[in-house]
Image (cartoon, rainbow, N blue to C red; front, side, top):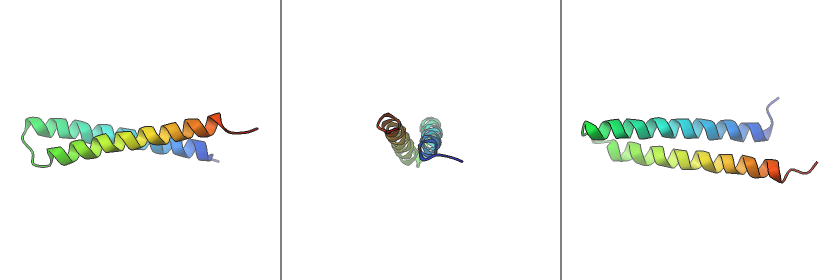
Length: 67
């Protein structure tokens, strides 16, 4: 069974990796003058920030969990 803490860590990893992928695609597109470069970079950086937010939430849940 997956606990809620593990779900948030998994969600954080997925967001961070997808953000990294979008950021790298945006950097590649910048060298080739794609029109969607700004959007790719914006979505990539935002997804990484959301991923770090989920990771911080999971860490705080683990810290303040009462036993």
